[in-house]
Image (cartoon, rainbow, N blue to C red; front, side, top):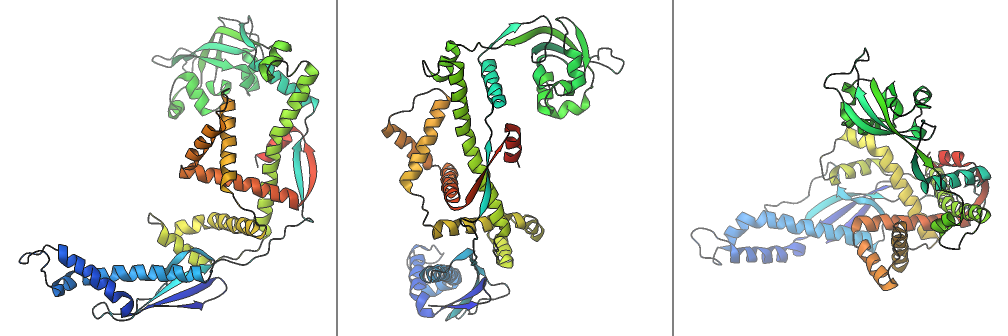
Amino acid sequence: MNVIRQDVDALNAVLKVQISAEDYSQKVKSTLEKYRKTAKIPGFRPGHVPLTLIQKQYGKSVLADELNKLVNDALYNYISENKIEILGNPIPKEGSDVVGDFDKPDTFEFEYEIGLSPKFDIKLNDKSKYDYVKVKVDNKLLDKQIEDLRRRYGKLVSAENVGENDLVLAQFVELNDDDSIKEGGILHSSTVSMEFIEDKKAKKELIGKTTGEKVIVDPSKVSRGGKDTASMLGIKEEDLGSISTKFQLTINEIKHMEMADLNQELFDRLFGEGNVNSEKELRERIASDLEGMFGNDSDRILTRDIYEDLVQNTKVDLPNSFLKRWIKLSNEKPITDDQIEQDYESYAKGLKWQLIQSDIFKSNDIKLDNSEVIDFTKGLLVNNYAQYGIPAPEDKELTASAIQVLQNKEEANRIYDMVSEKKLTEYFKSTVKLKEKQVSYDEFVEIASK
């Protein structure tokens, strides 16, 4: 058996696999002998069927299977032994036929195309400059966070008039165009959160109203989009287009959020007994927590910005024609050339980033250690327990749980991606020159959402 490499260009090559009769004859004969022992053919006792008959009936398919195994082994052994970095997998050369005769088997030759991994230069060093965006934790942001906490730990009390941020318990009745009640129309009780109404006119109509008063409203103006509107009226979202835009809203009850007092009881509920003892300490603690929380987001923004820069400005040539053929041949379901063309740009961008990331890891000896992945998974589990106020189990049990999580292939891939991104971010932060840029919370959210 022999493999010959023929380079087409820097990104494409052909591997010719030559197989002689001595490479396959013994294995084919052995397989046919097994068939002979088990074959049930009328007129012959089991194990006594003439080999010529077995050869005639099964010979070509057995030979084809054996040649397929030999070709695959030869291709991947050659690629491995010669340390050839390829993209995708070898595919039969377009337009080529198998050289050899299945009726008179002797020497066979198969031709396969391979796509070669490109060489490229990543321009990233201590002279590369990037903004490191941070949230400016100012008094305005702290005031908002404290107000949200006071609201979250406050209590609802009955109110006489509808206010800016109150909760209105109301009955909705569908109307005709002339404002009369629609026979067989929608009749449903629900709630309206005043603070989420964006339509100024609709909000103004409700503010100041008292229990028992009626107002004609467009449900879409006092809700937060299709799904919320449908839920408020007790119908399916797909039915919204067939209903009236006029509803009679009757105020049944008004609830006002009485915010929690800034006192020791609230401090203890938030951070544990005695850990925060004044409003000043509360503001310091919230500021610290926000900086830690936004720090992770700042890292993600940095990594995203460098990713976009590297993908856009690193010249990475790909064997595009080969890859398109490989996608078509390896896809589980039939796929058209038009579908491949439509999605190829996105696929190529993803592949380009994989190559860049792989090169960074390889060039800087960055590795994913199994114990490190387990520790990271344990950290995720501890955070999950903390969210529900449950203490984390002992380390032995936690380790066992982490290993069990990693046995799920999909979950393991997600966690390995997270660890990879963490290591990549650490590399970026230690390599490039960062210029700290403080922005307001709203600006930060806008930047992060791009």
